[in-house]
Image (cartoon, rainbow, N blue to C red; front, side, top):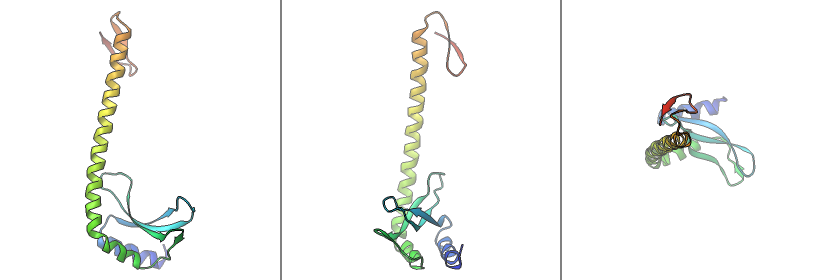
Length: 128
């Protein structure tokens, strides 16, 4: 990191220990630009707080990026809380879908073989 990046990272850490300076690639134009991200507590993908570019132009790194983060601080806390709730709900939904799919597979195996024991894909044997 260069001295400007170091100074900005220290200021971001002062605001919140989970904030960090990062690079992103613009999805349309392909250039790299700075962004500030928040590491999520639940281990999911970091939340982007600020993209430091305007349209098709990356902005030069300056301490203004920290001011933009400060300006969004109330919105940021609310967004993080909402994202955490949404991620937890999504994880629970995925878990329920996996359990349902496993149950359907097990029931399908039991339907096919009426002779007694059926070898399940997991190697577990069960009787009908």
